Image (cartoon, rainbow, N blue to C red):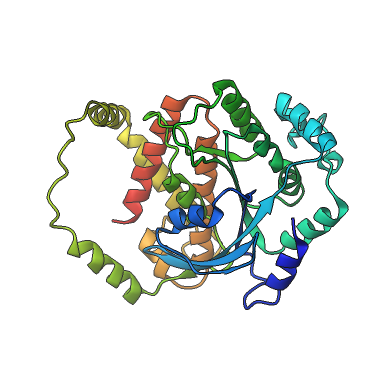
Length: 348
């Protein structure tokens, strides 16, 4: 880790905003290419040999947020640190903060210079994304110092992404299970982009969704005029023909599975979740406290309603995290579908 990269970054405009996404991986990992997949377009960066700074404007129907990717290369751990991380991987819950008998985060080894760097980064970084190649199992161990930062400073978004240039490479399933269990036990979301199983939701869209859903310090609500323009764009594609089911066996199976999930959803539960989110937003102390609010009022309303919108975003994020930690994949997909239907109601 090169401290000079981030020292220079602090001199940039808007540098002290907590809107940085730290993307880490070994030098051979194409981190800029990975970021391009997230943003959906080529990005301009301020680069050195091992690092870059890439700006990204998150824009949704209701808000915009200027964020910045900071990338840097990880290095292979020293033998003692690699042994430490291997033991942690074998017993993933030993640093679970919820158990008073677990070990403190202060006992996780870290170079003093890196510890100082992490203290400074914690002021501006709200998301850490480790990208590693599962074909090189030792590269997962690189997460150790950043697992320590996650425990000590608790950034909102923690993603561990398995991504390989060799799409045909075979990875030991037991290793993947161990990595998954470690991530779940330590607050990281596991995203396996090498998994072609149609029953999983591991795609680059999941990475993008996690980053977009965060409540960034630079978040600015769009004015109604801007919202109307977004709606006009949606109307412009409203006459697209209905989607035709594909003929492929795999695709047909996915459609059948989608139908099965859709039939199993309790729409009364959808209404209850939607109502509880808006009711919670109306529980302030001002006039009309305790009365449910409609979503557009929250977005475009007056005093205090920006905070109420932020509260909804926080609750939705908590639901997303809860779903990501579910071990029953069928139940997780069902809950994700429910959440999608709840969010769809906000757009009506």
